Amino acid sequence: MSSDTTPRTFHVKSFGCQMNVYDGERMAELLAAQGMTAVDEREAADLVVLNTCHIREKATEKVYSDIGRLRREDGSNPLIAVAGCVAQAEGEEIMTRAPQVRVVVGPQAYHRLPDMVAAAASGTRETETDMPAEAKFAALPQRRKSGPSAFLTIQEGCDKFCTYCVVPYTRGAEISRPYADLVEEARLLVEGGAREITLLGQNVNAWHGEDDKGRTIGLAGLAAELARLPDLARIRYTTSHPADMDDALIEAHGTNDKLMPFLHLPVQSGNDRVLKAMNRSHSAESYLKIIERVRAARPDIALSGDFIVGFPGETEAEFADTLALIDATRYAQAFSFKYSPRPGTPAATMDDQIAAEIMDDRLKRLQTAITRDQLAFNRASVGKRCQVLIERRGRQPGQWLGKSPWLQSVHFTDEAAIGDLVEVELIEAGPNSIAGRRIDSTPGA
Ligand code: 5AD
Ligand code: SF4
Image (cartoon, rainbow, N blue to C red):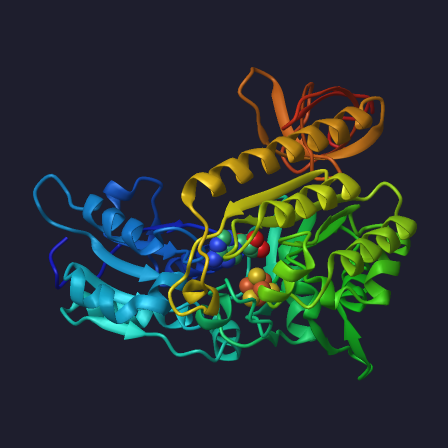
């Protein structure tokens, strides 16, 4: 493509969290609405959007190497747009260091992507990193098609300022999208084929709004309204903060049949001194109390969490408290990370940064504990009968992959189709997946 032609094909590559996946889908819809065609191969694309993540590790370096790899055999480049959190945090530097990048657009401004691409196609370089998120959603096109499991961002940003985390700086202050917009977007997703919707937000359970009767409601109220959509079978939400786990939401896990028995509730550490230094507003005990109450509301709930090992100053005894919290909670799954200093965050300049070998060792021990509990959870599911929402074909002929209510990956071989909710008996468990057998007799039911 020469520099003065409008791109006809595009490829969006999203890194990082599910919110970035949602943003990537919306950017693709925006570009398609301009008449551009999505292509799977980035080599074939006139426009490549790198939708970046800044949460951990050498994110910026990775973006530069990705940009370098976009160069074609003849030495030319596609029109390159850098979006997402690295764009927000380091946009100016990217423009200086990578002259082949023509568009830098932050996560709250990507509704402007088509205009920026059009301008860049005629030779300019465009940067937009303004923060107000409300304008973005209003400017996006209507949703039309969806896979069986859809994401819906209901809340963005974070006001919690955990001392290790870059999100409050890249995604801005907490905002909740309006109730009516969300009900409408969910309706369109279901009309377009979604049977399951996962509500997304950096602090999804901080969402609040006003319903159509003018009452102030939280996430439980929104989930109750969405549950009234007849063809929507499942509702999930992520990521939650312990401080926003209100009574109504805990209770909803026992009363809203469509709310799936799964809760991702990051704790980060099991030690109160570390939690305080992280500026988490909960203690290990208050976290465990929430877990106890959620389990009382929904005894079979699958629990998930996030952990950081090697936060500055973390001692072996403090790390042992995290292992003890894991033992007490018995997670069904969890994500764990080595602490990574993020430029501009308070923890990055704290004393006592932990050596890499210590972090490696702690991460290994933590992951051993999680894998043990994950396998135990999966093994305890064997013999259960549940519905599986089919998402895609498996690798074996005739095999299908889908999710159980507890978010386990289930595979089975039988007649079925993508989007079906089928009744399955779980027969054999591994740490990462479960084999099932279809037990209902009406394919497509
Ligand atoms: N270092 C390591 N892990 C981090 N996370 C966020 N910031 C950092 C960091 N600086 C992890 C937290 C969070 C998850 C999304 O990423 O566990 O919950
Ligand atoms: Fe980051 Fe903490 Fe906000 Fe989560 S709650 S996005 S970890 S600052």
